[in-house]
Length: 316
Image (cartoon, rainbow, N blue to C red; front, side):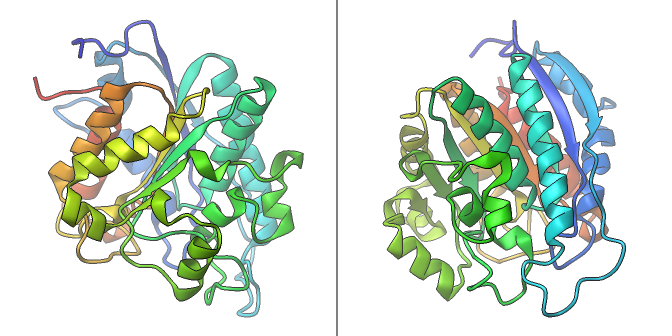
């Protein structure tokens, strides 16, 4: 790969500090922590520019925040706040794509994917092209209100994007589903609810999921290559959404939904390096970084490093 993988390309940083979709507060602080982290005395925006990109920081999307706690019976929780916030996220992502830029979305919890992927879907719908999606996560995120025991929306975004769950969330942009399942791949799952397992079997998605068991047996490289092959069948290219809890807590302790047995530091980088080498990535999103739970800022800095790997940074 060229020393300047971003030559002739634009990147737009978009902050989406929505944290109330999760059960543990703090992921909303991940946006500024990632944006302002210093690696070798440089901020993220400058490190992206060093890769040759024309880099701009568009600031934060307007997030409609709750004014009172959700009731225990609410499912989904904070529905209206999530709905309006995701509409704003969708508009920001759509605008960046329309300006021929690669959106890099900083979360926030994974409920923001309802907004970001809706923006992608709206854009590619206007181009009459399908797009693909690679979802890195310890969890399936394919719960619906009927299967979710918590009501937390960060466990529901994939279901919503595939057209299942609350009608207001699935209907952002005026159409549903946002994603064709044949162009979708999930990498790193190791903690699935029973309802999610049933939904995956019902939808015939087993071959779209590359679990940690699959990665143990086959290796990260082969699994990611297969995920890319699925997502890149879409003529519009593909998006990547990356939940840091996909990585083992030894390497990324700063997340609210930790599960032992995840990918190593190098496996995570390898996955994104291979994606960058392949080309075709139209947006990148990183979520669930919680500085309140981090240790010596290692998860925040790792998030910055992963963004750079996805944008083409190499060791040599």
